Image 1 (cartoon, rainbow over the protein chains, first blue to last red):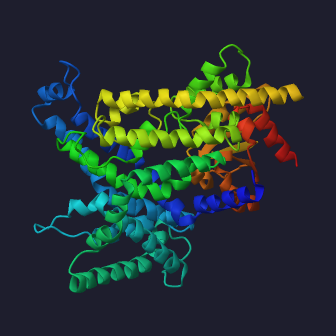
Image 2 (spheres, each protein chain N blue to C red):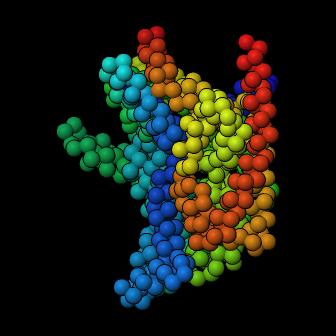
Image 3 (cartoon, rainbow over the protein chains, first blue to last red):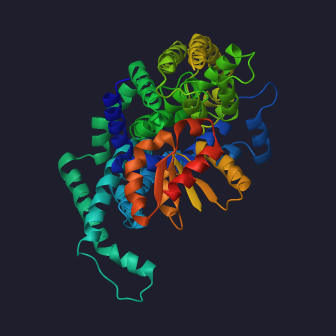
Length: 429
Length: 101
């Protein structure tokens, strides 16, 4: 492998992976993920399909009274997924401010306040839920970055009120943030007024139509899914955390898609009829099984190929990696086998996930398998994840089993080649 | 001796941490070893001697060095094979060598 090219590649990937604003965006999404998963599970439980005569939803409704049980899940949804934009406005600003070592809480609150200022108000003076959630995500991201940058500059300038020694730190902090907050909120207010007068629509509609909608349309296509799968595995091949580096770009674009699916599913639309095929849970459950590279299949392939030599190094790695692999953690196999910079493994490690992406896409687009309607923790084991992401359909499991079987078959010749290379090396010593 | 292992979510390194603790016990070494996600590193610098970076996030090396080396904390990227094979003793030795350098 060309060393200079590799260094350059790692350097560029590193710069993206460590870029302050992108990191703040990514960590902002990571921070709200528990809420998102709870919201998603709430919807799932509300709409869980009956097992034969056992119908969880109707039993619970029998206990709590018709519809009352669903209200629990519904209100959880309202506080989590439905206000995604608001949550993100806070969490990105918080993380970015922290990275500058300025008051994260103040910046986060300020950003949330500014976000609410811009949200269109309904006729009976309520906040418009449509823009508090996923549709407002891009406004939330842009706003939180701008607000925090302004806040940082102002807080470090001389436009702050300094308290004398002896004043409690909390009080001093809130006074320090006072003048920057006033200036920033006035700016946001002026901006809102100008938008009302000249554009006669909210900034939310402008950004949604100009940026978010076209990007989402693009991202729900097969080529986009292939590019993501390809890049992720290329990065991992160089030993870099692909999902992590791409996260800041993927999350904002793909979270609204799964939100839409889950929201429609909650309102009674079947998982076959929700709009989006390519989502992050789509990749997590049908492609990244056992971790990036569908390594659960690689581990199985090793157990098949090296079944007679108990002490074979490949087998040792597979044994070591299997328990964590069930939960989609695969660093042991990636670095232990290794896959990283191993020319024998380059082809299957990239080819298999891309193949599975294509197969899964067509399995869904032809209506064989329902679409994804839930976000799960990425550590949810395969099979279970296939059942849950499809809103409780055995077809999700069937696609996972098919994909794993195919991946095992594709991995086997490369494992054999790897074993042979290893033997030659050992023999040469 | 206080050692922190940094990776993206603190999950994969936590397996290694367990093995390293066992290796430290075997050597009768008093060592505090933890795994943290990168974003929490700055909250855990108190009394820290060594930061070991998971190879999958080695692109953060420069950033982490700039952050902690001025405080006299030693930094290194974990040897990737030892990391993959979860060899706690090897990684512990790497840490000890780093400290004695």
